[in-house]
Image 1 (cartoon, rainbow, N blue to C red):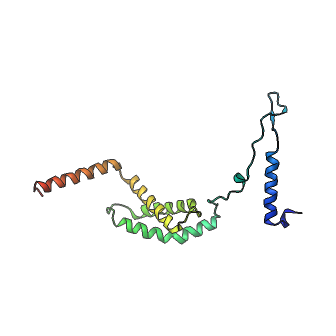
Image 2: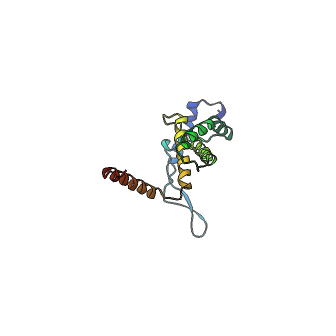
Image 3: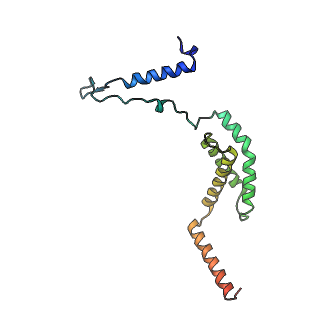
Length: 167
C-alpha cells in the first residue's frame, strides 16, 4: 500500500515500526585509522517514540503570515509609545521610540508560543514596552544604578529638609 493512501493510524504504525528497527541494530560501522569500515562494538543510539513525535510549539510562520500579523498590530505600537512618551522629558524623540516598538513587535511575532494560555496582543504589549524601555536606557548616558542612587539621595534630602523646616 502506498503512503499517500494510508490512514493516520497506519502512519503511526509505520513510524513505530521504523523506530523499533532502529533500536534493534546491534552495532555501528566506523572508520578505523587506515580508512577501512569496521564493525564497532558500540551500539547505535536508540530512537524512542517520545523523541520523534513531539510537536514544535514555535512553528515557523510564512513571511506572509508574519507580515499580516505585524500590520494587524502596528496600531498597538503607536498607542503604547504615545502613552509612554507622555511621561518622558521633551527631548526624547518619538520616532526613535516608535522604531524600538516595531522591533519589539517583530520580536513578539517571532517568539510567541501558541501553547501558552495568553493572547498574542497581551504578549506583544509587554515585548513592545520592554523594547521601548531598553531603547530609552540605551539613549541615557547615566547608568541605571547611578540614577537610582541620585533619586534615593534626593528623596533623603527632601525628607530631611522638610523635617528641619527648610522648605
